[in-house]
Length: 383
Image 1 (cartoon, rainbow, N blue to C red):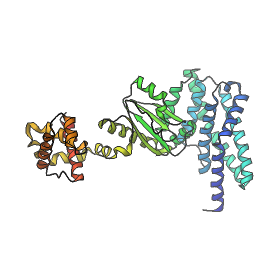
Image 2 (spheres, rainbow, N blue to C red; image 1 turned 90 degrees about the vertical axis):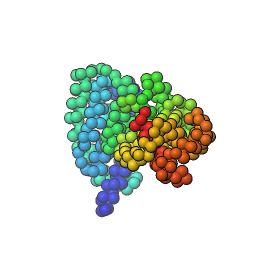
Image 3 (cartoon, rainbow, N blue to C red; image 1 turned 180 degrees about the vertical axis):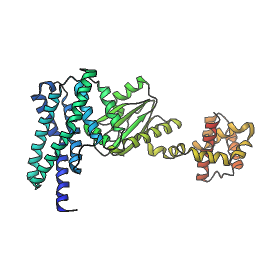
Image 4 (cartoon, rainbow, N blue to C red; image 1 turned 135 degrees about the vertical axis):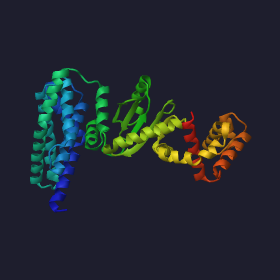
């Protein structure tokens, strides 16, 4: 890497640091709300979020010396649509951006002077920023005009705003990175929680508790799921006493949110199968998730033991159910007997019958895993 490339990387890091400084964002919000009448009614946090997202998008373009990507254009279009629905004219939107960028670049110049960054590089970065904003201006104007013509003056609810942010986070990649920046979420260390088949009443309860996660957070529906993207791990006793299983995955990067959601949803499903409630970290049910994801191997396993299972005759359902309960109770015949409402000797006899038929060894942990998987698959095929 050349010295100039080193300097460019340092400059980009400097701009990112300046644009993410909380006191600067607060000052920007005060400047914008104080100088633009149409913006004065907006919440300061919302102004800060949109400014942070805009500069996160432009800084990514400056770093790579390129024009806007489709994800960045989509972010700008979403900003234009939101402002139009809030009844804010496009002139005020453009003025707000100008006030914000003037304050941020002034701070960047101050910091650059004290850090030894080549002032010509800062000028080049500003020129790239101006090129980027000119390229996205058309999309901003078009989105604002389209929204104003179709739904003029309609204010998006907080719930709608969260849903839009979540939709962009679930796109992954740069779209998720920009959405995270707008929401005030970090680019790394995110935790995702998922509760499946949530009713309206449960959604209200869980959302009110922010799924017991730290702020900032994005909490919204995704179909029948309730998904929370948190800035860090939930509290130690999060959701204690809640009669609902909530899968947990992470930490991970903003760009990985779609994968984190899949893992959290799988953890929720696995936790429900085990009868658990509250938080279920994906690591605590990793084997069960892996098993559930390999239907092909499940078919191979049942086909291999088809004759053995058929030999159980009319006792197959009772035997298989009892053996599964025995394994899930830690191979404790007394606990399995209480769960299945049979005598402990009945449990032992059924375990002996199935292990003998399949050639499994009850003292082999891997064999027991296969045996449990066999029982689970057979029960799913014979509800």
